[in-house]
Image 1 (cartoon, rainbow, N blue to C red):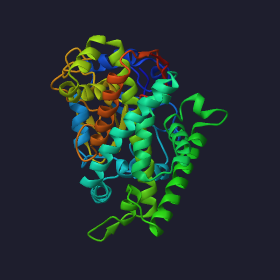
Image 2 (image 1 turned 30 degrees about the vertical axis):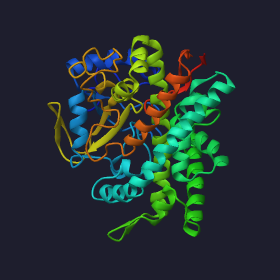
Image 3 (image 1 turned 60 degrees about the vertical axis):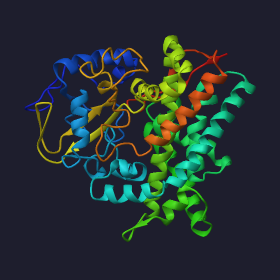
Length: 420
């Protein structure tokens, strides 16, 4: 073992290296499984790829069990998401970048509650009803184009298109700007991936993506102040609760969060879910033959199986106990959702893809508490519409092996060849 401090040692089963995250999800889970059984809370060295290297960083507590991930998630009074204490990203990230991109994800109470209520007020029942019909129409149009163009890459032609369209439509992003938005999101998610970094470095890659999204957001904010439209940006500009309003900084940050969370999570869950159905033809047949009855359970299994967000961090505000381990105030605590969603104590045969799994208490939308995913309803609407179209109209779809984005944040698929 490596000495971490005078009183702690880094665990022999190590979760922080680039080599570990270069493995497949199944290979990584061999390490997670050992820790779940023997040391569900372990002391680990700092994560690779830090945007803010700290030679004095002692490491973090890795929380890999389902029960403990939920406990940390719900204890927002004990474990902070605030940028001032390190924010929510696995590695160290400058506080200003977190403020500019994470919005309510990286806030503590009471600021979190006030801002979340303001943001939530923009999603009225009327807006959601309108979005639902639009999602149905767009899913049909996407599959029509897929059939007409012929198969190439499932991610490019199908997975990325519906969430991109939905988020853009909700926010009022014009069609000619959407490719810029997707490129910026890819750079921000893939800042540890050589393809996105190119000849630059992770920090430059991330900053470029942020600058692009902020530029798009500010243009929309300025336009909607003078000419309101029926979209979320207008609603955010106008939102007010008990005298509180959102600043331009608040709206730009939430725009970044929605562009990433609303695009990449659904896009990747769709890709993982379709590949799982292709690899498990009995489950595909079950869903196709009983779609309306089976799709609710299938959606939950898609999220559990793919676990698009693999890690989030908290920082202990006070001394605490997690999984029987003493955690000191100021310690970093990282929740591994991909491990929690394969916890053998909670999920029978966790590496069996089963759309009838019930119960299915996955943590793919978070482990509960105040930071539970605000957009989970829209994500389910999108996937229900798209899978309904695909299974009905492209029943002979064949998928090749996915190519994954490097990194320890998003379980993202860059490309996935397809034929039919």
